Amino acid sequence: MFVFGPTILILLPAIILAAYAQWKVRSTYTKYSKVDAFNRITAQQTAERILAGAMITDVTIEPSQRQLSDHYDLTKKVLRLSAPASSSLAAIGVAAHEAGHAIQHAQNYAPLSLRTAIVPIAKFGSQLAFPLFFLGLFASIPSLVTFGIIAFSAAVLFTLITLPVEFDASRRAIVALRETAIVNEEELGSVKEVLFAAALTYVAAAAMAGLQLLMLLSVNRRR
Ligand SMILES: [Zn+2]
Image 1 (cartoon, rainbow, N blue to C red):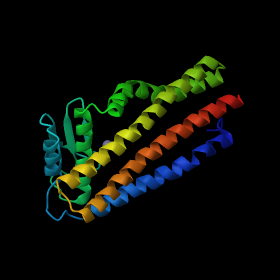
Image 2: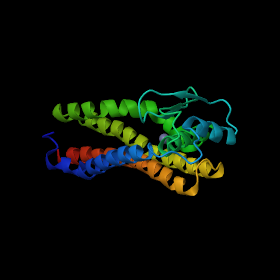
Image 3: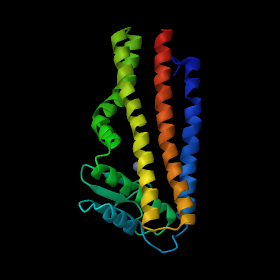
Image 4: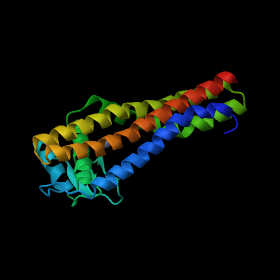
């Protein structure tokens, strides 16, 4: 930490935003996991209806174990839901969002394809960036420092491309929920709250990554 000195304060807004987003997503999810949709449709049925409405027949829906571990696995075309039998607005909203990812995949939505393509580079980048950067710094090998910064930029790029992917999946979820009348307008407002809170965590992650990059650049310039 000491090499960063006061530069580490750059991260403060992102740390605050991340903490707020975590609290917001937990509290909103908890609140709406206790409120059932008027027509008692389940999360599983929600996903099935939205997929059927989008003419998607090759995606299977499976239960996932942990809470808030819902995701769409595009390599296996599997949509995993943590609360498939729940009729809560939180579970329905999350299921609709994941179905939104399945629709993006089926329609070859460009930001999703791009994000998938850079996953290996971003993973490699986020794991090696800091070790390379510090090794370069302490051993005075500028090219290693530069390589560390480039590697971290790939991780930053990933968090940025994630934003349109996530916002678009939620937008598709809202449209589908309205079209299929799975929830009424008032309930849709609550679903939007859940999805907005979830989106905020991605904004916080992107802000954190961006500011970390800024921190590496400013430490490098000071040396
Ligand atoms: Zn998502």
